[in-house]
Length: 444
Image (cartoon, helix red, strand yellow):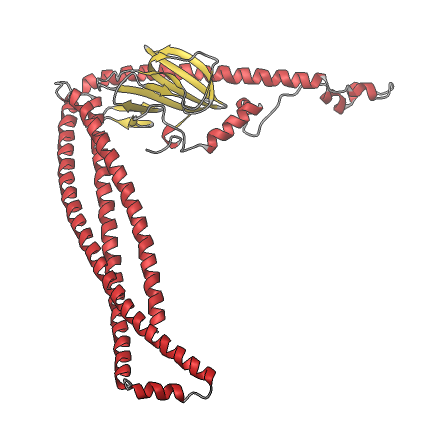
């Protein structure tokens, strides 16, 4: 019986030890995330401080506040995760203490019975009589072994009781420590909720002022629409040119292949009219390669490989700007507090400062380096996928250059809305079809 309890005790110790390791790993991840969030919040606050004192409100200010609120909510969510983890740990610890206490009670009862038995049979004569009543010498040896085993059994009982008591004490101390951690986390949660409430009040004030400047914002939005249309038309022209080049190349390859085919008419009888043979006329006609995707940019070996790898990396592609975040999402949007609406053909990425490197998100070829709306832009082709990096202050690549993932294309331009940092308009297209770049970039 005692061996069974000892085994359970060892198994439980190992199980809760592994649970403790996993809890420590989760706690370390939460702490790492929290430190990063604190850094991001401080960075965005520093940027916001540069424009906070300006009399005229701007969309950039609203973007900063929204970013702050988003980070603050993630920070609070991080604290909530920690609280759930602590509650789970306390609950599991209570269960373990309850089980250990029941085992301890059972162990003590077993030990008490063995003590009573030993007391009743404490006479030395009884032990001697037990040995000499053996039927043979071997039987006597077995009885001696039994007595030794019984003595060992008693010692194990005592050791197991002591170990169980120590384990219960240890778990109670750990539980008390977790309760202290919970109290601290709850205090931090309350503090951060107050900060979030202040940020939302601050946002309401900015939105109210923006509403009073709706006419000025309409002019800004009209200028952005004009620049966006110029950029879109420039990209469309680049894509059409690349498709035409691919189509021309496919046609030339088809003609070259047709030229080397055997002339079927030479193998026919001289009395047969070749023009009446459908197979002959078709064999001499040049054909253009086709593809199941219907794209001329999915024909040659390099493009097929690029297209396949690009799709496989969906959701894992690196960001074109380090420490950037989306300040205007893809598609239709409304400026909060106003009736003004806009449409973003890609995503607008804001960064703490201008002049930082802008990098290509995947292997490809630079097919466009051009100016549009007073901004420098670079377009890279990845098979049938096109990425455009707009609002560069300088460009470090040339048209026709091959680029690798993470290679610098140029430097980030300033935020023209007075944000005090840098801003990149990033577009992703499958030929002429616009898609949401956020779904392709790695989440962070």
